[in-house]
Every structure is written in C-alpha cells, then in structure tokens.
Length: 161
Image 1 (cartoon, one colour):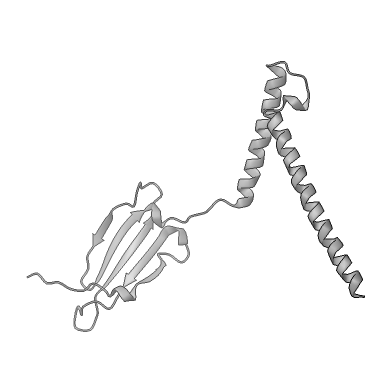
Image 2 (cartoon, helix red, strand yellow; image 1 turned 120 degrees about the horizontal axis):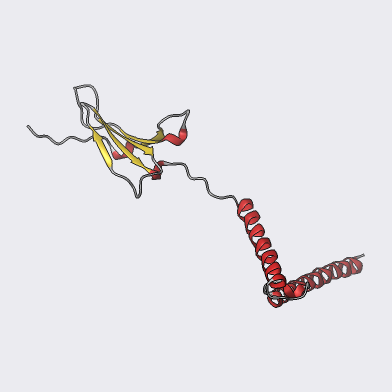
C-alpha cells in the first residue's frame, strides 16, 4: 500500500547545532507538524548536516527512515565553521611580503647585478620614488586644506566678537 504523507511543515523549520558542546560538528534543521503518524504524533523530518571538510562539493544525503520521525544525514564541508581571515592578519602578511620582496630584490641587484648600495638598487625604485612624491603632494594638499579651514574659522570667529 502506498500513501503520500507530509513529513513536516515548511513554516516550522528550526535550525540548531548537532552538539551544543561541539558546535563545529555540524547543524540540524527540523521540520515538524506533518501528517498524523500514530493518531497523536505529527510526522517530522530532521536534516543532520555533518561537518566533513574532506568532501568535495555539497556531498550526498543518506536517508534514515523512521515511523514518525525521519532523519536525513548529510555529510558536507558546507556545515563546517568558516573562519574568515582577519584584516590585521592579511595586512601584516602583506607588509611582510612587500618587505621580503624589497630586501630580496635589493640583495639581488647589489650582489648579482653589481649595482651600488644605494636606494636606486631597490626593485622598482623609480616607481617607489613616484609613489612617495605623490603621497607627499597629497599630504601637502590635505595640510593646506585643513589650514585654510582653520583660518576661515578663526576669521569668522574674529568678526563675530
């Protein structure tokens, strides 16, 4: 005999952790209030998304059937915690990388290319010089703008008294 039953109501979905003491183990999603099962219990369906970083792609679900409560176990890396890189860490490693590049390039230019020990031996020294000059110009313009604002404020305050 075949029959079709509601395994749960879409509006009853509740997310939770598989293990409160080990949140990295995975998540669960429970749907309840399905078709009556034994006259007093509504059917329910529970998805267990188990963290498995070794699985490529979304993984494959495995159904474990029950009488009134149905469970689907799904091993996937999508259920694993995500730890985004911090901005501080990325900045720190970026500065270290730039430092290694500049020092390594300087040593290469002096030792292997025979260039003198001077700022011109740094890799891309002309570009670095141009960036430095641009920053100096921008800071100078910013300083002039701030100074002009203070002079206007002082001038306005001086005429009001």
